[in-house]
Length: 315
Ligand code: NAP
Image 1: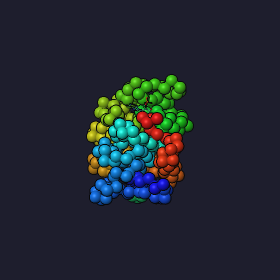
Image 2: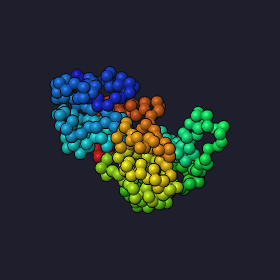
Image 3: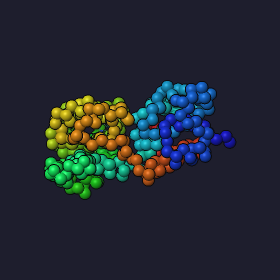
Image 4: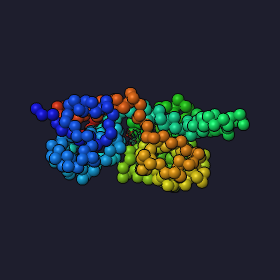
């Protein structure tokens, strides 16, 4: 049996590339780098391997008549046109759960960083400013109010950690979750009005675009912090910059941005934000677990076995 041919559409780590190369004929980003080679290979390509940030649009799917599976190494798959894939009977898989701990850890870290001014204090020491006096007082996190915009796998892992900090927890989502012991509020605005920390952890895509807008930020208020570990598209970035500059909110901790890896100068210049480079799941242990699951989905598909983790729309 010839090995199935697959197209890699992202810069994937070596611990995923290696098993891919051992088991498939891999066309590594030729759709971007070598259009002529891609045109030749396209009719034979049966799988796509990408990352959570990969764009797999209807045009790319259209160009691959033999495509059967798109395996995303990431839980978010808002870059994949799932409707176009389904219309062609192409299954989409992702890597949920194995990254919950890391993303939740980072959310708590950003909350502590922005409230306690940890990066600012690090710079204070390095710049030799400490001998001239202490830093301004920061804000206490323990015992404060957490509002979760999204209470899925990662949102619940954030809530568990927040309980250890004695925080009260409320959430919003598309529907109330009666099994969870937290208070439900129907809108992000109402939730923001009752939160000290508003943590965004929904999927990206059209349905959540700019869910956090100027009105939600006003409701969060001058004592409130916004944390975004979801997708840049969920927050109106311009409204956020204006709110941070005007003191409409106290500060923000951001792992994701509208136009990654480009972050607006106006955001980088602000001192009441802590910025990280989309590192939610970026530990060696978790990226390996994600790679294993992304590979397992491809291997199962071509072995005609049940898929470990198709996206909900393809179950
Ligand atoms: P999940 O289990 O599917 O949970 C998603 C949550 O978002 C659910 O509670 C859902 O509510 C809620 N939601 C969806 N649409 C909404 C809307 N329009 N308004 C309000 N709430 C909405 O997903 P997960 O595994 O927790 O992952 C969440 C997202 O985190 C991923 O999709 C990805 O974009 C992001 N992420 C980021 C990083 C990073 O590196 N920063 C890493 C991993 C994941 P319902 O249950 O009511 O539908």
